[in-house]
Image (cartoon, rainbow, N blue to C red; front, side, top):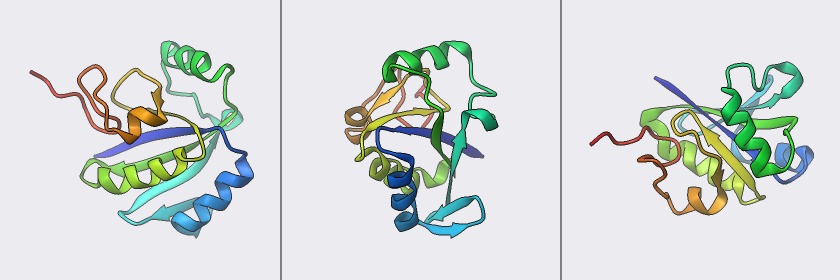
Length: 130
């Protein structure tokens, strides 16, 4: 099963693209990092928020202070979470926040770095059911 995460960087798009080039193989419209972990730029005018719940978009806007026009989308198999987390943590070193498929939460750099548990789940993995 494929999972998705988004990193909303505080850095410029140019700086992020440069970093992505060092993290994975450049392919048409995407980068492929070891794992494989598939990475590309998602832009608002090309459907970034198309499947998002309005509540999650509102949380992101509050956390960032505006509606981000672009993000880095990361797709990975759940069995490759560690490889995906390496890419995500590297991207977050530039500053910013992240969102995943599992928890309605905007994750801070510190929460992702420390593998914090929020609402029963860690970033990039489903919540544990009691």
